[in-house]
Length: 126
Image: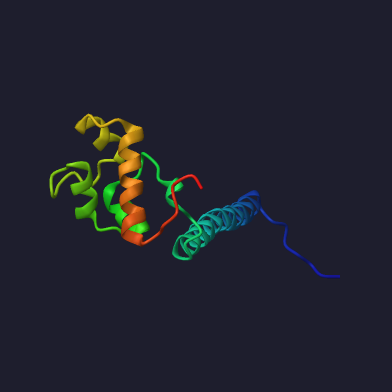
């Protein structure tokens, strides 16, 4: 017969808090791990050419577009008639509004540049 000393309420509370902390840590690890995996898979599809210019979104910044599509930011700025530098945090949608460019026309200009720069010969929407 083993004699376990009776556990106090403080010891039980600490044990449950420890278990809760481990479970919460594992849940966060799973959540952020899944997000990282999704981003990795997306980056692989972009690199393989599976993601096309139709994925261009208004929230994207010019540096982001330049990196994802392999187009020099200077060419993007030139195409849209923007200053050579500055406001790197501004989204494509915001740039088009500031410049008074119709969003559909502006997006078409950026898509045409991406296709020309990457050597793709397919039309957007195919």
